[in-house]
Image (cartoon, rainbow, N blue to C red; front, side):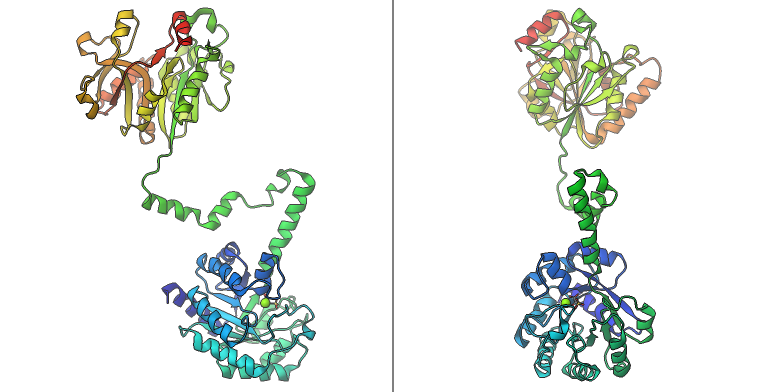
Length: 542
Ligand code: SPV
Ligand code: MG
């Protein structure tokens, strides 16, 4: 027997035998069981009525006993307090009862209550007087069989006396209770359908303390609990109130939704989804995932720096920033977004400044740098770093660079927390005499460099030719774990001295100087920096 089962069975037995009045609350599925436990109940009543009702069937053994058992398993797994199953008549004769007890113990159910009626039973509150009772000896045999079948001493069997329900008097009730006690029952449940507790009080007075007595005051609900306490009852069962509460709430909500056709009229009346997650134990799973799952790649996001006008394009950027200049029928930014999307990046943020309202493509996280005219790209970068999701790796790029998706892919897949892509085709730029950010690295591109981890040493326009290993294309990967640190460095750069116009290469150099390893990934060609009208034409053929 599992340890938890033993604990539960012991706890239930101690509730039965404790000198004070104890309470069970009905539950009918996993979540209602959790709710009952959280409210402080030391035990749960697996009500036959409620279990049937939540299946949408009648309390007439229409749900099979194994269907009931399956629901009980969810209830038991979700809680630590003992469950007393309302086992109706034991779902058959003594033999069915034996199997029931065996299965209940296996499912860690602490106790079962069986009633002295005939299978299939009917709820006690539906024409109770017309209900036949079980033969006393036959019912005693069922109790004995159950007690003999249980493998652990603390599993309890509660014998429910339906004599009052069926219209018999106190004598019949007492005679039955005594027979059931002799057969080995651990407690008796005396049921009554009267609106006053007279029957159960009379029973208890005569019965005294021969066995603990359990009651279900559904019909005599107005009786103060003190009365039960004073009479020395053992357990009170609130037998169906979570079910009835949920029915009232569901009916009200369903009616509102059907008539109002909106959600806001019900939102205040329902728990937040987060409460559902909490009751399901979502936090435990998150912790377990941290412990047992390899670090999950949370995906990668991109930050496009596109705040500047791009004066060099003249009237093309009179009404829109460079990133929105049309190339081959689409804004530059749309090409960039498409290339990022093609690598699987869907979370894209864009820092906009000049003519910001023109940056209006869908599905972008727009971040404003209204200070664009009086500051450089590091201000945009900082605003960007503060406006993105801190838990996702990041690729920073410019809003005027066309590129093949593989360049970004290589960076995205790299294991370096900081990394840049460097074009080995740098001679072209030198020959074309265009301004470029050259990179000097720990090793030039070669067959050997392919399998070596290369790091950036310096980046800039002024690197002497013999030290140049490639051209930086403007892509900078920052792993999620480094985003805050990089933002901190940028912040300090901006607050110290005259770095307002500092650029990304200045940041990269500072990071390298501070001892950070910035990984280098060599690629060749397949990108285009749009810096002139000529480039715009060129880009059309890209
Ligand atoms: C139940 O909750 O299913 C019971 C109690 O058996 S009563 O409905 O009062 O009979
Ligand atoms: Mg019942």
